[in-house]
Structures are given as structure tokens and as C-alpha cells.
Length: 198
Image (cartoon, rainbow, N blue to C red; front, side, top):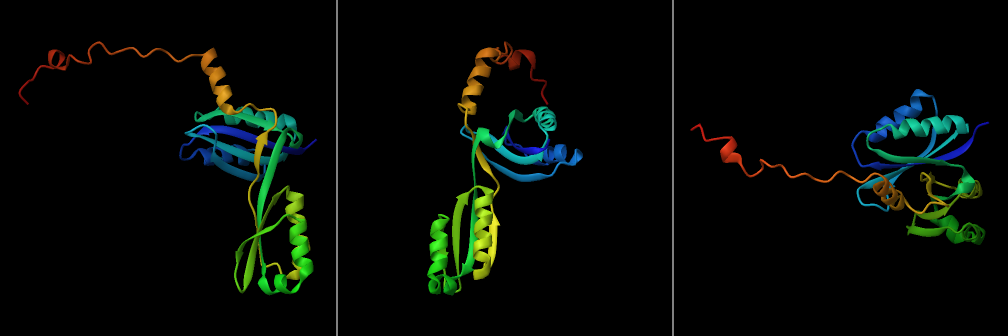
């Protein structure tokens, strides 16, 4: 049975990787509900957060396919109970409506919205929450002349994760890198390549 899954992918930051990951989904005709990329807790490592509705078997195969990409270090998938997640939403409403109607101001407070821009013609509010919460505020503000609405992609943290840097440490302990071997000919250029006069 299909359900919502959040896929977290740790990658090196390379041009074209986002396109290759998106192709993995489009080849299987899987719609991405939300996609976010950001730096992670480790310098030079980026984190993709991808939300899809699919069966667990399909998601497991997708994650394995994503991990085959050279720049991908690790990919995980989780159901909503295994993560802490939020989305940011912005709402633009006419300022005169806010000023005149106390009810609107009360509603905004009820949903934890705060003003980020106040102008004579419009006011922009922001709130964070789950999709149902941000969409509910759209419904509530619609009768008061909601001008514009935008919602960010999901950001999520895995509840039981100790952080990816711990995984990297474990990997290094299990498979340490090879020792660097000095090139014995490094300082013998003249002996190996005598000056031929050119």
C-alpha cells in the first residue's frame, strides 16, 4: 500500500547530481511531492530531503538506486513517525484588512503566524508547521483577500539518528583509507629527465 516516505540523501556537492537523482524518479514515473537541498552538519556534504507517496518496497529499491550514484555517500528512507519535520509558509494579505478586522489578527496569532513585512498595501506573514496546518491557514485567510501563498519544501531530521558524522567515523574505523606512499622519484627530476637543450 502506498504511503508517505521521506528520503534523506547525503551527497558531495557536484553539478548535475540533482538532475541524475530526479531522473531516477521520473524513469519510474514517481512524482516528487517535495524536494529540498541544503548543507548538512558536515562541511562539504549536502543533504537532499525528498518526499514521495509510494510503497515501501519501491522506496527501498529507489534508495538502493540513488546510492549507486558516485557522489552519494548514504541514503535513508523514513515514514512520518520516524522523523521531525516542518515546512515554512508565507502569506501575503491586504494590510487594510488586517488593520480593520481584529478577527484576522486573532486567527494569525492562533496559527503562530508572525509579520515579516508590513507595507501600506500588503503584509507578509510567515508560519511553520505541517502541511495540513499551513494549508488550513490558506483556507482561513481566503475570505479576507489572500493575495499570495507559497510553501517551502519539507525539512526533516531523523529521530533516532546520531548524525551523519557518526556514520562517517564508523565507516572510517571499519575501512580505513590506505596510507599515503611517497613517490620515490619525486625529487629526482634532473636524474630522470636530463636537460636535452630544448
